[in-house]
View 1 (cartoon, helix red, strand yellow):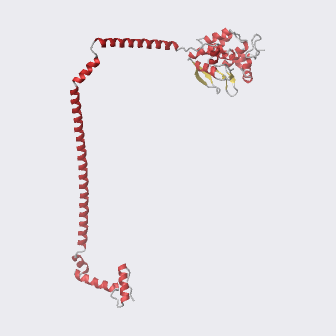
View 2 (cartoon, rainbow, N blue to C red; view 1 turned 60 degrees about the vertical axis):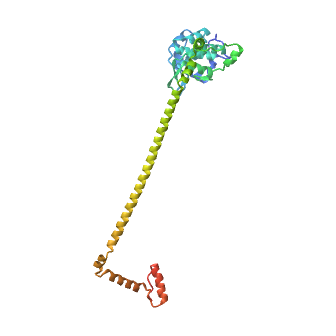
Length: 347
């Protein structure tokens, strides 16, 4: 009995109002403790007190998909079906934002298309923050206008399938709904009036300056006359500036040329110095080699004068190389082997 719809309630969209909530979600609401304890015996008047106690919105959450108190109260409104004036007062309530969201949610489920647009679109200007319980049980922050946009543009909200409604432009073309008026339209009108006033003021100033132009001498002509009068000064100044620029430019080129010349001379000096150093080293090496092959050293080592040692070596080489062999063929072969650095034939 506690879960039955009020007998005086009218069918909505051709069905029982509680059937707007899916059966699985509806059965979870009936089994919920909040529904059994807090929602039993509620009327349209006492429902307001429970709605004022809400501190978040949402559908089902947790592993067993437990319904929120917000969903239980929406289900109770579908069961008792309060009058339209009470629902409109819920929506127009500025003090309790959760009461407003609950009234908008119920009107979106049960209202006609024109009423939905007429009463829910003004809530786009409500930017207050509301807490929403996500399916994992955590709370997230959202805003009233975001919830209203979800109700008007999506098919699901708070785990409830929302009935489809006609597009706004269709209702406007049928004449069932007036064109939407933005709250910023007044500000736009004020800005347009301000721009028009400024434009009028500029036109008056231009007209006044035009009259002064024809009354007296033209400031443009005065400037042109002064420029023509002082044209030689401007010309001389420009000539002096160009001449100074060319002079500085020539000096810069001279400096660059001097740097290049100095660099080439430095490189040439370095090369000459390196060559002289290499030559001195080669002379020292030759001098050292010549001193090491001096006659005194040979005389000290061999005990004989250098000429005698040379003669002995010549005789020894002649005897050892085999070129003085009596056989001319062997002598010729020994000469070839001596030129190749091989040992002579001794036959």
